[in-house]
Image 1 (cartoon, one colour):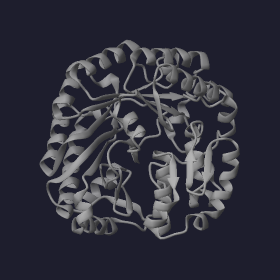
Image 2 (cartoon, rainbow, N blue to C red):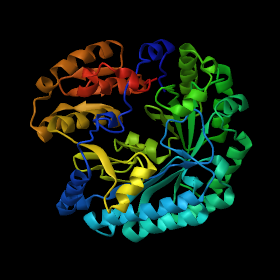
Image 3 (cartoon, helix red, strand yellow):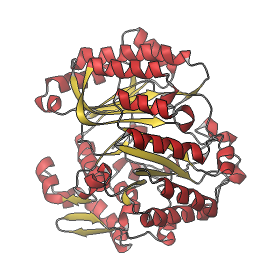
Image 4 (cartoon, helix red, strand yellow):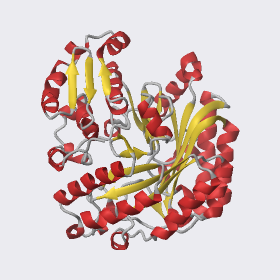
Length: 460
């Protein structure tokens, strides 16, 4: 596996979108509301193409028992688990409103519970929620049914329950095994606990086990992170997600508790990333793209080899591009040529549902140019190539004329060896995969015109 050099990593350590969608969520507008979303649901119900494709469902569970200082998620810190019981009743109302517009029994091939901490829910709460989904939708065999797991909230018995409920993929939030780093971010979880849970999950028979890591956290050093990398190699999860910590205390209140002086320097972050890439390569992991790695036999690595990789709001996926129904406070969905986001506070979310309304408060109806550029960006992010001819046939454009300025900008990236461009299209090189966001950013009309780029995380 070709490894990116520290020099290149430093050169492209810039801010940019993650492209779980295009246009990105910061482009959503308040003018898009419930009626626009209802119209999109109605069009899907009437469309033979829309009905033929299975749905994806995302459920946001916002509750956490304790605050992790690095967190940038929409969460509610509470030890009162009865708040989750109330939340589940409102989720049922939201599900019922959806089925009223798109029908009962729609096929679903992907479910993801995120948060917050989905495993904040009690055993009965998890049963009730999965029961709601099964009563209203048809979860098809062979689908991806995943849940984010805080290791501090589960044991082997709870993992067995998750399997019984139909989950076949787990994602454990690890971040770092170093005790000093864990103390600095207020998330203490011994490595032995994670190793025991992963062993139990394998014994139970989950299809895929993912571990999340973060580099750039307070108290981290390249040497300390090396120890975490060695432990992860020993743990050998099926997938690894390696994220760069973005310190934005002006936007995320929790991060104000982090001591700025404890954060590693930019050069240390680049070193951690470079060593991580080397460590995962040595351990036999395939670089899927951006911050995702997988063992060669994992479905994600197989999908990349076969050109079947897709990307949605949950990241890379093996499931075909499809409409996404988003449930819960702040959840983001996609139906047809629209994106939508629910109310960000529980009070507003509950109030809208009490009025019998879907809790959509912002979103976007995509223009033709948005759709063309989305096709380009997702082709780059997922397949690592863009072929002009099929793009021209699909959108009735001359690609070289339509993207003349973008192709000019790509010349610098081509000189750096990140991409090759010819008359047929462009292809991301082996080195270029590490900088695929930088390549995609060239085709982002909004980003190129944006002067306030600091609101995005660093791409390295």
